[in-house]
Every structure is written in structure tokens, then in C-alpha cells.
Image 1: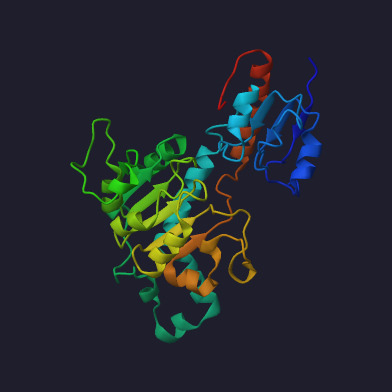
Image 2: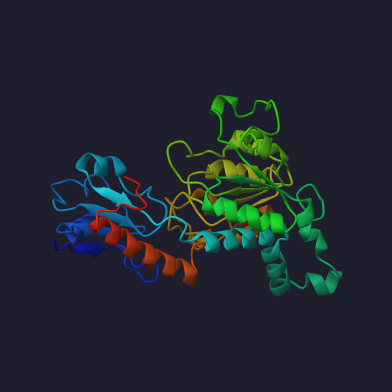
Length: 333
């Protein structure tokens, strides 16, 4: 059978994002296979009226939250993804963000190039102090809580242990009504630590789990109040898992020592002087305030590496070949 494959993205390497739902629908109306990375596919686009021939959606990424999977299920459209392709790059980026945030590297950089404080005062180490006025922790002093223990979480845990950090793997979060209740123990049978215990004990919290109805706003005001004032939160997962308004309150109120995030509620989003209504709330501060509250941001680029692209392309090819041969792999729906 002849298939018409429509690719809606170019793996972030050039500007190919469709500007409207109408444009997306026009491009995919004759497709039997859609290849997609970041372009959303809503129920209307996936309806039989718009895509009557569609049989397969191949996601060239691990996340599938932009696809109406219920509509695909009802129509019998298969959805396949590319898990673990970006594991090494995302894990590396998470570690880089941790070091930059813990040691306030951007603040040091800005101080050097924008002020004469080092020359006139002899030292600027006071700017490296935590919000409780402590010196930066070394790796051997850190307790790292990993929330989300898939391929990326496992790789980050491995790297942290190699640096001498203590690693805790969080169990699933209990109901929100129990979020602040004390745990009955520090370990459970599968080797994981209760969610709230991880929040209490960790000096670094790394988020690497998918966005779904159960994880939206998983980290909000109650969770920030549990955390140590020395805690640095690193988010390389998806926007929306951290309540961004609550994050701003936690940073400004000194509940945590800092946050490094690669993902946002709204993407792409303006920041600082370029922020506009509708952009991600956490980016509506000046560069100076971001330094002051120890907020480090990158524009959803943790995945970016040559190995990731090679893995994506190989998995994309294999997914389609397997599907054509009746051998399904990486099935989401």
C-alpha cells in the first residue's frame, strides 16, 4: 500500500511550525501517516472529516501531550513515540542546570561584566550565599530527589551517584489532601522514598516525568512549603507540572534557594522585557530579579544534541517499518 507521510516539524532545526489550525488541517488532509514533534493535533484535526485516510501518528519525541489520544483511540489511529532518544542530552542538561543554579554562575558572570564589584570590593562571594546565608553545598553534601524514574530519571540518578550525591527516588504522589501529612517511614518496599519525604529531605529536586492529568501542578504551594530552604528545583520535564505562580511565590519568599527550568506553561514564551500577556508567568520578571531569586531558564533545549537527532531519526524509521510489517513498537495508543 502506498502511504502519504506528512511531516509537520523539522525536529526544531528550522522554522516549520504551522501558524494556524486551518493550515495544519490543510497539510494533513490526505495523510495516511503524520510525523510530528511539537505541532498540536487536536480532536478536530484528527476527525474523520479532516483526516479521513489517517492511520498512524508517529511522534518524533517522547512526549505526546499535544495529541488528542482519545480521538485517535476512537478512530483506531495508532500513535507511536520515540522514548529514550534524548536521555543522555536531557540528563546532561539537568546536571548543567544544577551546577549553574547551585553556584549562581549566571550571577557571577553578570557581576563580572556589568559591575566593578570584584575590583572595588575584593570579593563577591556574598552573592554566592544561599537565601539562608549559607555557603554553596558541595556534591557530597547534596541529597537529590528524583521525581520520575524513567530512562532520564535513571540516568540522572546514575550521574548524581557518580558525583557522590545521595539519591532518593520518589514514590508516586498521594492525594493532594494528604500532601503535607508526615510519612510513616522513610523507605517503602520497592526501594522508593515517599513523595513528601523526598520533598523534605532533598537539597536538589529533579523533575523528569510526563505531563498528564495526574501531574498537572504536582508541585505547588503546599509542596514548596515542605521543601528545604536550601533546595534547588531542576525541571527538565514539561511545563505545567510546576505551578508557575506558586514557584514565583516560593522564590520571592525564600522558601527554596533557586530553580532551574527548561520548560514552561506557555511555549514559546517571551521573557523579561519581551514578556507579553499570555506568556509564561514565571518569565515575567527582569533579568536582575531573576538573578536575585536565583532563577535560571533555558528555552526547552535540553533535548538538543547530535545523538538525540540520530536516535530520533532511527526510531522514526524503525517505528514506520515495524508498523508496515505488522510489528508494533513504542505504542502509546
